[in-house]
Image (tube, rainbow, N blue to C red):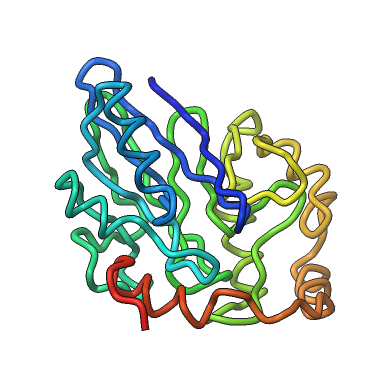
Length: 230
């Protein structure tokens, strides 16, 4: 497997390139429009054909590159059917399997940060988007957010994975790059050490976070796969 973890500094967004060594087919998870040229150069340098862009949700903090990459490479955009992005080529649901060469991705619907959030599970790792972060979780105070639903998603769909499963989040603001399910179950400040659903809801209600800086531009753009900015 070919694997690259890429980082966009303005919004602290992680994008993941995963490729099949045998077929040279690849996916990008949560690509950012401003990094488009870098993706194209990396794909060319590694001799990879981009098959899918996999969105973990419709983002409020950056504009996706999925539409631009579709125009440039012929890749197909994958989004959950509840995400509100009918521009996508594939509207997936829970338990859908995506095959890319020898690589397999299982879609797990993990709503709560937004109603259309998914995580992508591979044999040894999971890409959790903004549902489960390293030491934390996505916020639940806008865009169909629901703290109780997010708790249920993480406990039932993510903490049920094998303990040594690698956790690759959609963002990190502290310089962390990877965790494990075992570590998050033990040490996550919002969910770890057996915190209850009520504990988590109370924590999320008390965060008092600022209004997302780019949401008014990013949301309408991302509902059009990054191609229409209102």
